[in-house]
Image (cartoon, rainbow, N blue to C red; front, side, top):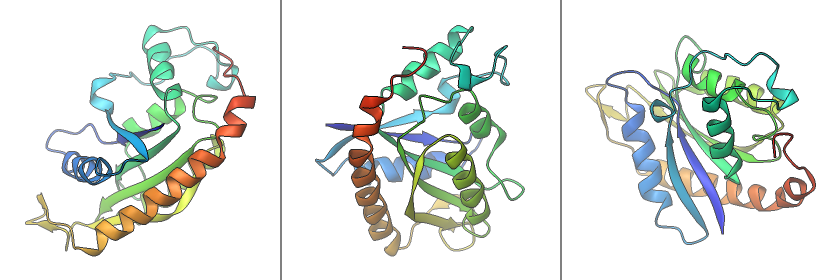
Length: 192
């Protein structure tokens, strides 16, 4: 069975992303076609990228990098939950993505974003990053507006249509993750 990691991309105190990530996990867990697990970047404690050689080489010197690589390598695809900070993704999320290369490749990615305009600009930046990492991003995404989907800008109160958008995104994500399995079998990570 496929394993999908739900990456919580914010590490801020009082982050709204925790509510969003748990909403995704709760709905995804109702499915029987994959195993969904939450990956909270707070729990991985990655410092600013501190590897001596570029990740594309795959020669990880630090234990925290090797642990992160092992975690990411175990998944077939990802749902990335991201806020929008200054028209982009949070630094902690970008850093976590930048740490690795081969482990992201030939895997599918779906996006759930939130912000004043639904996190749309962060989602677009994330698509560019994913392309550079050889990830396939699915078209459907879920965008939460701070104005209409959070009560008092604090408590997630998603509109009903978001649930069907998430289901469509997960359908696309699992289809692409399954299709990319052939490529992942042919590509052995450099660090393996």
